[in-house]
Length: 141
Image 1 (cartoon, rainbow, N blue to C red):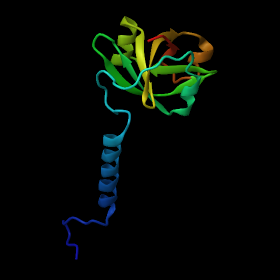
Image 2 (image 1 turned 90 degrees about the vertical axis):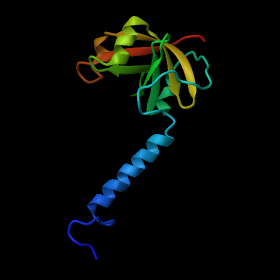
Image 3 (image 1 turned 135 degrees about the horizontal axis):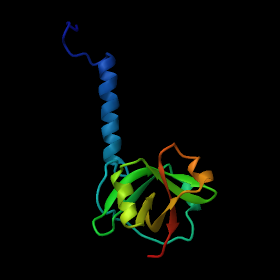
Image 4 (image 1 turned 45 degrees about the horizontal axis):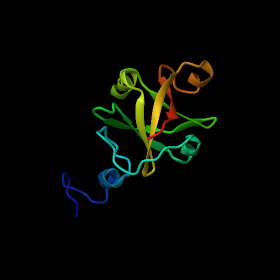
């Protein structure tokens, strides 16, 4: 018997609680930390191209090598080149202006790269308006 004002485990609220619990479990088990954070750890290797990145939905970008700051971003590959985009005022975008050397985690591996801001209209138009676009250029370890 469920009296008015008591908790029900089968009503709409229980679905919401279940969804929240699943979300929390996903976040805790996720390879990519969903929150901004510090230095990434894991195996590193250099590559000549990021054309393989299209097999991933997300990447983790580490900026500011002297005091690492990492964020999760969606993967965008255009003609074999890896791009990320930043909204105005994003902390990590400001860090790229100071030092374009970054590290990128795709899957379990971390790759050194250099961010180059792109102004080419043909590329910029493929992203939401008002974004700063960066191409990730592989670099050596």
